[in-house]
Image (cartoon, rainbow, N blue to C red):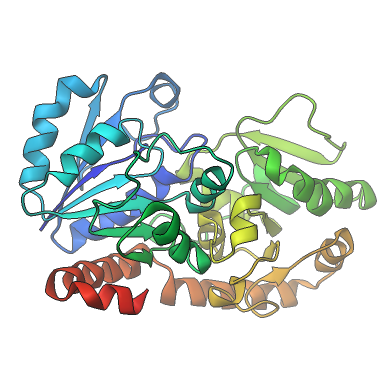
Length: 364
């Protein structure tokens, strides 16, 4: 079968969580015999940080202007079994119009940023990637976030059907590796700077760094401001492309996961970094949010933290205790949260939608 996708980016992992997810999923689709075409607007900030210029498993169409590729896009949609528009796609509105006119393709909107979408709507701001008719014309809305978000996609945006389609990890790309002295530490954190994560970062990493000056803390990411409250024992590594993530996760005794505020408040929205770290065999400390135990068992596969003291306690755990956490988390992610597992789920969703549309509503 064939999937045509209009997305934010798959060519650059800089400052976004979309690219790595799409790469893993596209590879999984290819292994199952799917033909994928991915349309991405060639914007300067991703062009300058591109870490994937060619895809062997998909036809990547980079374009400067929608009008230049509209005819080709129309042909690819007309020939597709599934046509997808995603959140933050720069040309989501014209792509949506094209997809809604598809003669035979299953018309799907995939929101990889559902908490942000819903938060903006409640504040009276319609996201630029959703038109005035909301999601009413689509056959199906997939959401990176489960729980109550699914009902709100229907009530606020008119999605006829909404299903969770969670994050995942490609274990061929994320797996345990040899430790790298450049990334070595007692506690690491990998993530793009976000103002709504800052309070948690200070509570779970900066304050522990001041209290434990003998320990080494490492932050990797992009867009960190000059006034970030660094401590003498916090070391910074600028944006790391995905191939470097396994060494980063493997090189610290513990790694920290912090969820964006809107995602944490809504719940059932696991960060892609959470799955990546687990697949790399990291011992994970994570903030707590509704639905966490649907993905990992707190205390057995990950360590939930709410205070600075919780992090200090985690730092005091023995190597044997952390080894147990690593093994348990990796076993869980390989069983339930791989890209291949999500590709299988996607096939089932598509099959059910084509065979019996009502069954989707029952599942949701």
